[in-house]
Length: 614
Image (cartoon, rainbow, N blue to C red; front, top):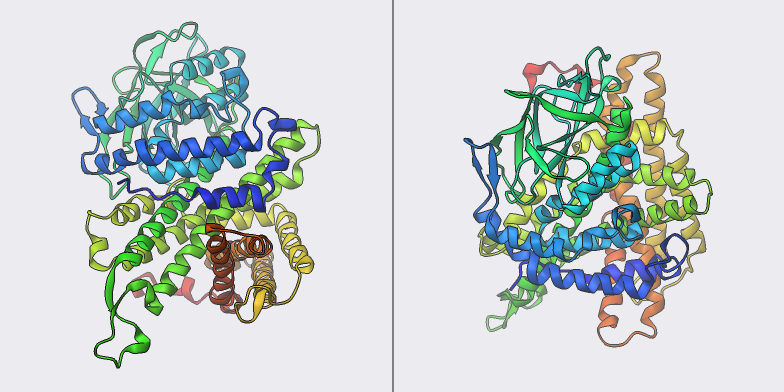
């Protein structure tokens, strides 16, 4: 039986019952794909993920790819190759690809719902299949000649990578020293070493196209001096795609990792022994801006990957808890002959399971909410309208999705394992691998602290708080329009949960206010910015809690309405949605008041502490 437990019902609930995608699919920018087709896509991809893709994720973890230093190549295990071929042969990668590259218009919300299914089953496989997306970036940013390269990449299903990190630079991308030397024929030769390159070498595709940040000869320091170059593993004829021999880029090592072993991570040397030829993207020196089109897609992917892992981790833990008989009912502890019960009868197990459920379903709602904003951007742009407000909200929430989503998923996967007790520590069950595979998500494409600084300095300060204000206004509009009263039989009813969300939103706003004041003070006293740094991750996580609380309660309002006419399994489903939202509001949102108080009392003590005191 496959390790992967999907949740297609919840995907469809969010897309069609809460976010109203039926009204968007099949019209305007998405005329080629209606709601019925969208549902069919999800059903087919779910079957493929569960039945054909999932097993190789486990097999490749036990028997990972192998590096041959003599040829500087990596071979992947056969089960992963078979799964990759089945996925690519299905053509699902064409969804969302430009028509000029043989793609099909696809709403981002449907694309990322599909992505969750594949990323939950086999995350490495999704990453290996990203070549067509990189081709779409060349199609959008490249010259006419480079768009021919994009077509070759799609026609021949070449792989692709983003190449930023250097051994001595790490997250400080602006400190990169890789050089780009101009050539008489208009090409460039790249010289330097890059590390932590995901899928930088493998044998699943005949060629790999690297997107490399390098500093042109004579360019200035920092990120502004970096340009983006298209550098293939094999040189090729742009007119035919025929390979002409190895280019001067070679893997020098395959990293031995904690998890996600099926996905190769390598060090790449450029220009060692022979020139590494490349082309300047779009013939423009605008590297960081261009690369961010890849980075933002990658951050959306990483957040979705993390959330997909939590969902299947929780559902595996739930299956185990329903069948594991251990101990007696706590309320009958005094009875010697009390029957043994499944562990779902124990209070702390229920607390843990409901916490996992709330986060798994709330984070899924967050992914699809952000993707729905991206739907709106596409619709507005297609209609010639100004999508600035939607872009601002999308930009605000991307670091939340990636940073908060990856942190909470990893945290809650530990609880999924805890449900299994000692058995969870064994490889007979998948959760120990989920935890190892998911840890990278808090590090990929910027650690959580970097996401938090981006969230505050770029998405709040630089934006002058417009997107955050719009988000809080949306939440308060929901609360103002929501009917009061107790319609679900859960005690104090939805009104109390709505009150807790209102308080949490105010706490978030106050925390942002404290940090804005410290940021302003740093203009006169530079060290005041340290207090911003000490509170940044706290603000990011608080925003995640508020948005997830909002989306859970929004879903609960729909579920409460549908419950009146529900039949069969839908009754339990809707009750679960209502219960998870109330539980999150009761047990998570009140904690933001304490976080607000902590944020207001952060001072310079920690930064003044001598290093030898740590």
